[in-house]
Every structure is written in C-alpha cells, then in structure tokens.
Length: 127
Image (tube, rainbow, N blue to C red; front, side, top):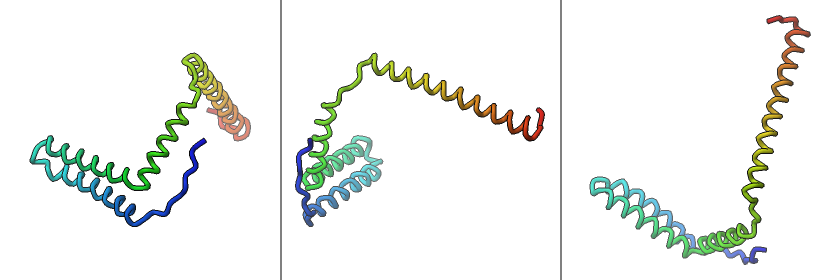
C-alpha cells in the first residue's frame, strides 16, 4: 500500500519556484531559437542547461517532491505486477485475433442478411 502523505498548502515560495521553472523552460526555448546563428552547440547547450535548471528548481518545490514520491510508489507497484510469459502473451493475442475474425464474419453476415431482407424482400429492388 502506498505511504500515507499529509497534504500541505502551497506556499508562496513553492509558487515562486514553479513560476521560475516555467520561466526557465521558456527562456531555454527562446535561447535555443535566438542562438541559431551561433551554431548548434550553443543552441543545444542553452536548451539543455535551461531545461536542467528548470528540473532542478521544480524538484526542489513541494510539488516536485510529491511528484518524485509518486514516481517511486508507481515504480514499486510496477515491480509487484506478475507479467505474463511469452507463451501466455502469444496465446492471448491469438485469442483476440480469432475473436476479431469471428466477430467480423458475424457482422458481415448480419449486414448481408439485413441488406437482402430490406432491399430484396421488402422493397423489391433487384440488383
């Protein structure tokens, strides 16, 4: 079971950190496009440095810490999943394909039967 956490009210400092993270992301994107004449190294450098700085600021906020805790809990739950074997996965896929083929045939036959009933028997339209 996931650990119980106490919800905290967002402080002004957390809001400022989130705002700064957004500004850093936007600044890194703007820097990427403004440094086009400087070459790809400067462009990508500005983008990567800006995004890393934004991630660091985001992770230092309370929301970032909650996000990391959620990620850890999710990973822990994924480890608990019993995944099917290759044989089981192939069998289930074959069952699905067989069901799709049977359903397609059923729908096709139903369509043709209704077409025959309406157009040939009721309306008398012969093709």
